[in-house]
Amino acid sequence: MLLLAFLFALLCFTFVDTQVIPGGISPLDPSDPKNMEKAWKAVNAVNEKVKNGQYLMVPVKVEKAESQVVAGTRYVFEILYGESACKKGQTNAINAANCPPKPKGHQALYQVELWERLWENFEQYTVKKIRDVHACRF
Image (cartoon, rainbow, N blue to C red):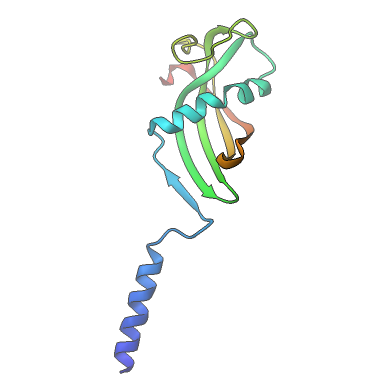
């Protein structure tokens, strides 16, 4: 009987151990196109942090992506942004077709945190620069 109780407890522990913890951070696939869409939505928030330079910074690659469900969804990304061909203040439609990254332009890695509550049409961005990156990377 003791052996049966032990095996049951072990089975329960194994089952719970493989589940995602509610409210816990879950890794996402950085190459998922939805993550790049969110990176493009963060362009204005990133460019508000970039004081120097006359060109807009645009996403080049999502390096890391995580999510957490907390009164909505909190996303944390590490995104490589690069200097684009679009000058600040001279472009209405900022997208991949209109503002491609310059091949040898300035690049930097940013942490972008997005908090979404879709049912309230709410989005809040927090942006922190991690470091500059050499342009030859892509």
